[in-house]
Amino acid sequence: MTKGIGIDAVSISEIERYMETFGDTFIKRTFTEQEVVMSQLSAHPAEYLATRFAAKEAVFKAIAHFTKDKGFDLRIVETLNEADGYPAVQMKGKLLSLAEEAGVAAINITMTTEKDFAMAFVVAEAV
Image (cartoon, rainbow, N blue to C red; front, top):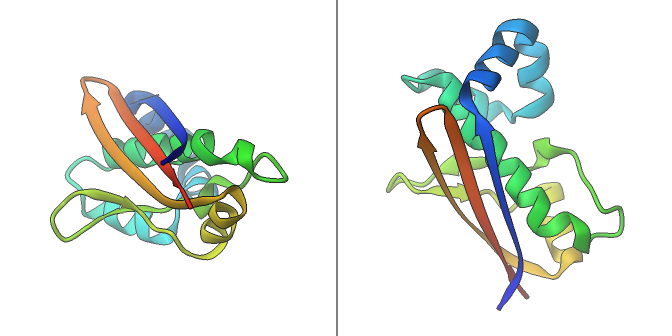
């Protein structure tokens, strides 16, 4: 059963501008170490990070309002690709604890890009 949904769209050029303007400060305050490593292996690092930023926001929208604090640090959301290439939100650590608090057993995600936009859609499944 669906517990919550979230969607977000991010301008890739805006993420690129943040990377140029704020450099490591923006990246370290926003993404996990593994997301940064994977972006560096990508042919299009700004696009890779934009999809991950959209994913973080979509997960937040899907579950934050079910938690006591109604919010959380976006760095706890880590989205990496599975062996088959499909994205997966890593349910571990603080995110796993908050998901349990919110009554969420699984987070399903899909991401896409079109021109200058990166988008993510999340379905949080109930326990």
